[in-house]
Amino acid sequence: MHKGTSNISHEIKEFAKSKGASLIGFAPAEFDEIGGEHLKSFVQQGRQGSMSYLEDYEKRVDPQKLLPGAKSVIVIAVNYYREVPSTPEGHGSIARYAYGRDYHKVIKKLLQNIAQFIEEKEPEAKTKLCVDTAPLLEKSYAVKAGIGFIGKNTTLITPECGSYVLLGEILTDLRLEYDKPSEGTCGTCTRCLEGCPTKALTKPHEMDAKRCISYLTIEHKGPIPKQLQKPMGKRIFGCDICQEVCPYNKSLAKPGANKDFQKPIAGSSIRLKEILNMKTDEQFLDRFAGSPLMRTKRSGLQRNAKIARQNSRH
Image (tube, rainbow, N blue to C red):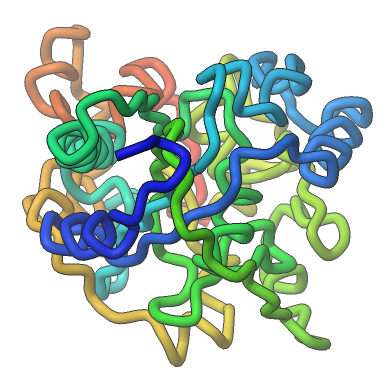
């Protein structure tokens, strides 16, 4: 079959869902001018903090730079939501997505299965896998693929399960049946802006990453500014507040089915004493191997735990 007239779109969707994709959609692999301008403004205002990899925004807006000849972007979303108990005294809280196995590995495995399915059906097809470490504006293409819309808190909100989803993409030179872009809206709601304790959401659809608790506890290296420490509360890895207050999540969020996200490594919270008593990187590795918490390293997690302990005393 000629790659320009592939009709396996329905088969790909059915297969992806059988392997654990909560949602899937297709978008044309076109230059993303609107998304590029938004990212350019974000970088020019210095809101990216130390995430210097975002500064090369020109290659993030053109799928052809990742896969020459790409015609379609396959976007998958996996629901990771779970109910969490109140954080016990003496514990630090963990964002929901980091409860179990590192999502990069989970999503990549799913994408590999889908790509293999495509290649079995279309042996000449080319594919390129992208998790969030790849230079692709994934939320923008998720909107184009009909997965959801971008809320005022800058997360992707889906009409099926809210914003507790993780994304992955496959670029392919197959021309698939494109989905209708999403057109959702937050209306007049501003609960996420009002709920953010560090005021990282400076206005609707705009975030200053340098003030975001997720950025501060994970990506930021070195001391955390004093004025931002108290608002962190007991959060030692990530933050879900702007999602927890969202009315869409209150009505749509439901527990995800992916087993890799259900087996605890970090869990919902960790005793601060356990973290602060780790003397070596080997101890840290033994405890958190396979977890997203490896990203912040022992030094970063202990820095966060010290702040949480101080906040608990107050």
